[in-house]
Image (cartoon, rainbow, N blue to C red; front, side, top):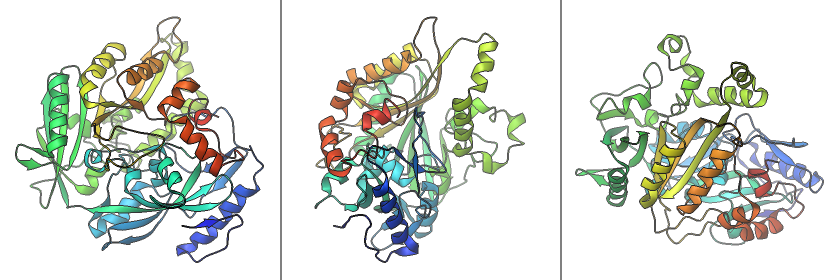
Length: 465
């Protein structure tokens, strides 16, 4: 274990890592108690507007890099601000990949670990934090500690997932990798009702096989109550053809038009990024008359996120719509996890109350049933289904702008599920503490950020400070 109080003793590190981390630790230690701190990041995938502006921004330049890949040990040392796009570019030449690669290119490794991440390998590999072997964490009291599953800082290791930077920032992580093959063979299976869909999903995730073939990836897309697609991916050494969804062709539209497909492993990992799943349609770029003039390098989630962030900040389009007499709308951008046996109930609620289409389905199971994760505790004996839905819903006259989001929260809790906190949340303090283990968080906060330089988890995720 390492535990370096600020200013920490300089030690050798690859590419100036020690110099960067020593500077950051000294900066944090110099911040007055209670003064808010924020990372100065180029990109973000959060959908929570902050109501206060932090006075202190930490420059994390130099931490978006892969320090090394060990093909023999199947591990990588990675800066916490490294995007998965850069991480995959470093590992794929070795025939290796992170165990779970979140579906958007600019999600950072540190962000996925402290804010949770998910993708179609999650039914067998869990979430990104479960493949972390060690993490150098910059804590609120100006220390850099190495958190591992065992040892002095094991409690921080177990509490880092779902902490969203309220306990500390992951500066460098050592992660496991797994072998990959050059191609992924996709099979799209269509269902007409949620009950048979949920049963097939549970069966495939339990057996990891379908129609005699192994299954390496599972996700799905729900287009309506009677139009559900389950997509099964299998690694392959060769492919009769490969599709390209980085230009005119749109991936999610292919799901209803073909029973199988083939992608390179690289293009499979980023199949959702080109159109931000399907959310690019809000910007008009799914119209062929527009799309032909958009350079491919701009067809990516980062572009759309910046446009959406600009609109949330200035509200120009929203004001124009109000001038046109359009109904008031509520932004419903959420990812929730419910047990697979409660999936039909949630979908019935969803189609009745929200009627957003499509929505994304991704099964997830805790990789190690014996592991304990303090702030996001899924039942290790159950398969959960993550549902992602990202759109707006019309408000009836007199309805509060949080009406539909609150209904989602209540239904997810009723079904024994959980909600990711990257977007807006409206829980009461008591309900939040019950769901996200407030007692464990308070103990970690006292140990690693006693002066409150980082915000409280409830304050950050619900009150948006």
